[in-house]
Image 1 (spheres, one colour):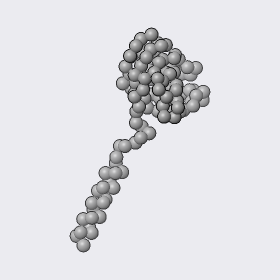
Image 2 (cartoon, one colour; image 1 turned 60 degrees about the horizontal axis):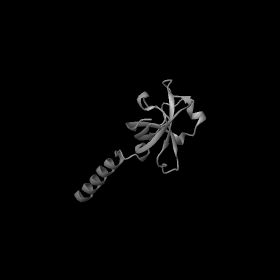
Image 3 (cartoon, helix red, strand yellow; image 1 turned 135 degrees about the vertical axis):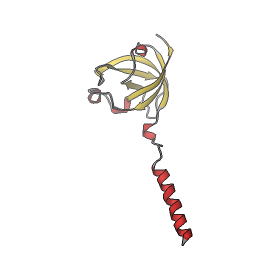
Image 4 (cartoon, one colour; image 1 turned 45 degrees about the horizontal axis):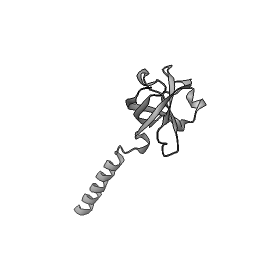
Length: 117
């Protein structure tokens, strides 16, 4: 009887660890490189301009251009080559959602300027 109780407790603990895992692939970021093309025809939630970036290598879904909602002014110049981590997100985009596909909307982090225009 003790063996059954111990085995049951062991499996319950494993189930607890598995269910609390943070391995959410949809929230994982990708490191990409791309050239700033300029602002697009929609604003972000903080009344900034969303910025389009042409990727050096397409994403898995053959996406060659992405829109970033949170690029700071120091990186926004057309022609800048950037290295950045991106996460797909609709957060920060207001009317961009009506104009563009949500497949190309991203938030950036760890932005590095590789070459300035």
